[in-house]
Length: 222
Image (cartoon, rainbow, N blue to C red; front, side, top):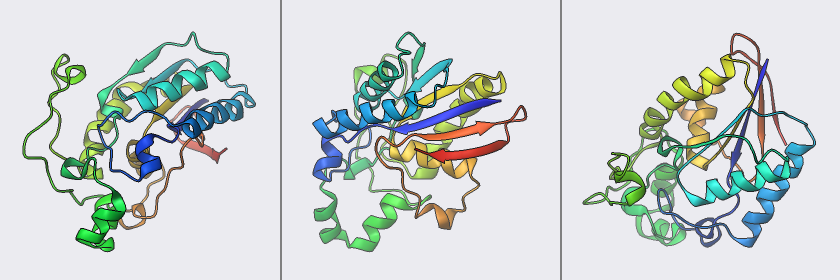
């Protein structure tokens, strides 16, 4: 048996201000820090001995993972930060207020951009160039649908996360709403249509128990 715990980072300044974020590096708010501590306390009550921690390359997830690891008294764990776990890239929507964007394009269109599996947001005209990515040879996308983000998450799931779970390791993954949503779609066999209604709350641990064949035995949201 092995366990996988998924946690969306605590509230970021972009969450608070209702801003499209994506790969922008928004920090945690005071409430977000509290959510991270509370997530860690809830997880500590389960007494899970983790073997490895995975997170993205964005500070809101990284800091949340540090806080959770401290709360469960396992700060010594190895932690792997990988761009494949980043939030979905919202392209030209990045930095825009969601409510104002809905006034411009219509609520239905914005809802589709945010929640649909295949809809691609308006693209950037040129990619950004942040050192954290170009130093490892990663070209930032101009924008992504949820499906496109799954295409980069999936290899990491297969090569790293699933491999660790098959090796009977307990895994903690701290990431983002979109990167966790596509994992839930895969793990829970959610259809493209039902994916529209999948929500992941900030700082609410989702706990999966797997058997030796990587079949789900149980799922609990704390």
